[in-house]
Image: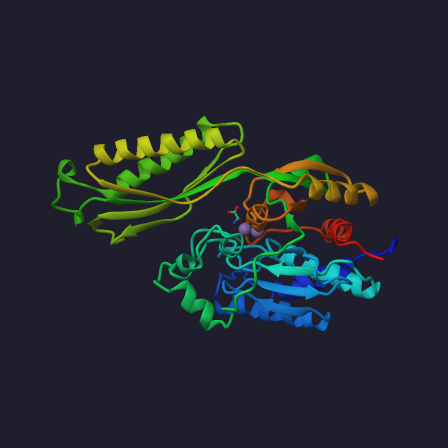
Length: 410
Ligand code: HGY
Ligand code: MN
Ligand code: MN
């Protein structure tokens, strides 16, 4: 067992085959949650897991659990995994790496005929990205008891498609499972930022994740004719929205170091070149590793958006739709990841995750940890996202070590 190694080429080949589902011209993927492409990726993953001898179950929000039995199946499983849904212009590795690294761990255990004490499961969490249906991390959020299932079923995308109906349509509205039971959880993921590459480190020992808040803002003015309407009489919702965009960006700079502030989505109504926009819907994404600073960013946004609305004679609706505090990961899981990096001699450093991950919600109900590997130029949520077979394999080898550390093996 000492010499048990994962097969990096097999992992890479699985990643490349999975990346063909929803492949885009620039080499990325578009596999939005609960679309037919999401279904295809789920079906492929399940076929691979069944070939590896796993028993597969699906829960009521579509989370998939592929189980490899242990000697004592009464023990809570050691779980690893991530997500298969992507951003509209996503990359091959965001999410899929954590899922297929988990599968590669199962395949390596099979190759070595290793029997673990506790069962090992690979999980695919539904709608981690929160792109088509907001908020993010719905599957792990329901699993951890943070989101009521009925609220998630009622969620709609911008075309008015209902989450529950789409989940049923793709055949992944599963049966209720008992109370969540996870002995320990590990998620392997690309860093999605520039730090590990800049420091020339192979492994990121993720000690926690920064806090995150998502808002939906609707500014309402008055549609009117772009020609005869004098400037002084206008209630132009897009002019107000443009000032909110500038304000969000300035708040991000005001709360350096570390703050991140993004307006990623905007819908202008009626979006016609000779009509003064009467309504704008936009999103705000705030992040900071310090909860107090995140709270101060929140207060600044609310105060300044209200002032802009008043000055532009607009109605303002501001809804917070996601809020999680900075999350430290379990010391025992962090230590297992560190031991794995040290055992195999991989360069490594501690890192806080800038991105949200399912591990953040799983950490609410079980000991959780993450393993990062670098990605090229720190680019992610972009079709050119790239990583090397060597780094991905190293992260998977550390994952194997961490899983065995917690699952016990002979
Ligand atoms: O937004 C995030 O951090 C993650 O990619 N869902
Ligand atoms: Mn991800
Ligand atoms: Mn992502």
